[in-house]
Length: 309
Image (cartoon, rainbow, N blue to C red):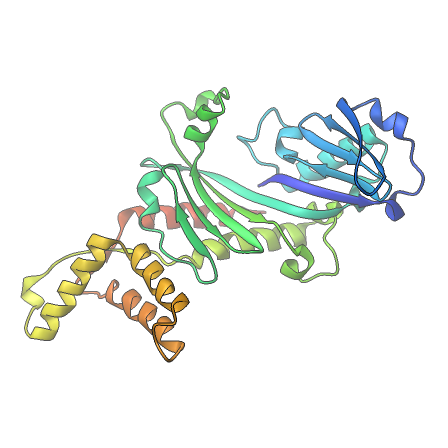
């Protein structure tokens, strides 16, 4: 489940260390002097970028690519512990003590349809900005990003050799990126490399990954039904549904946000009320049905969580 893991090992957790010995296992080594007058040494340990300064050591990269041939398969909890042990041996540093500055937690899901078919049924998510791309769907805020993308298309774009088991498959990757204030997000004094292989922390991360998916508003398909049109009010309800269907619920929600920025209403609660009205309207039982694609995605997500230990 783990992919990108960025680490910071401050000098007070390292003690004394020998730069020349660390350099022996690094490739593409460069040294440069920054504005603060310090000499910084940079190099690569496999796919990891390693930067050494007087304050400590920074490591940025994909732990999955470091430990495995690629990141088509994500790291398990036990693999993570072995990977950090291997990194410690190669760099002669106490990597398990390093602070974690970023965690990417992801899973590949084999779907019945192309990943792009599912994006339009994944609506807004509170406290996130939603951005749809041709091959991906992003939700972002200042602390984290959740991302859905076509893993096959992404791999082909990078000219990677795909596993044979993926031939003809539709692979949707759902990824959570925790990119800022990790202690605050995980409610503990600090997050270290050692924590990542602990069962309690791993399960907490998995629960967050799943809860963030659950918090996305799932959109329904609209069925226009003349037999339910018994009054002018019913008529306008269906007209409004038609408009939402034509414009797109995500665009409607964005327009409400635009109104908020322009301070169109005198009462701030009107914007939330409008969004609530749109959600309720698009889930009217007699006029809408849950999408089969959402049902399939829900099932795959629940199956992934069921076996997360």
